[in-house]
Image 1 (spheres, one colour):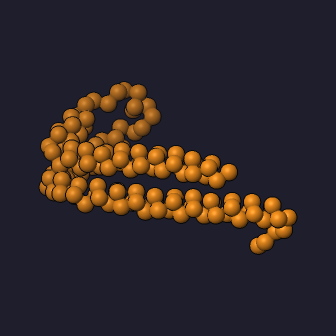
Image 2 (cartoon, helix red, strand yellow):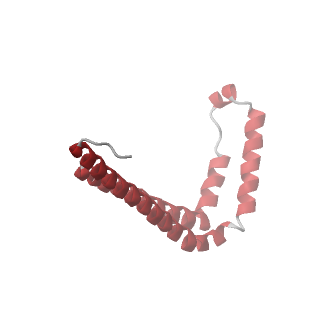
Image 3 (tube, helix red, strand yellow):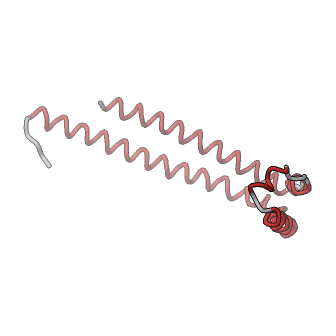
Length: 132
């Protein structure tokens, strides 16, 4: 039974590590992309694209134009901030790995606790007494 605890811990730890690695890479890529002018150009191109006619049936066209104008304003306001976001990657990625480490410590503590509890329960079931 104890081996099952450690097998489950190893699987969860592997997925936790994979998730942290993917998140760190995604954060690094997204911050670098936002810091470059590519993101603003792509968003501007999306805003200039005409909407399909069926969208007007489901959503009020006046509301859609309001949303477009708000997104355009956010893009213009963010132009000054986005280049500075590249410096944030130096802080965000290490924070992801600190979170990974805290998560691994929590997983390890849970596995050690389960290991101990299984040992304690198996001893009490062998002796025929229950200790609380």
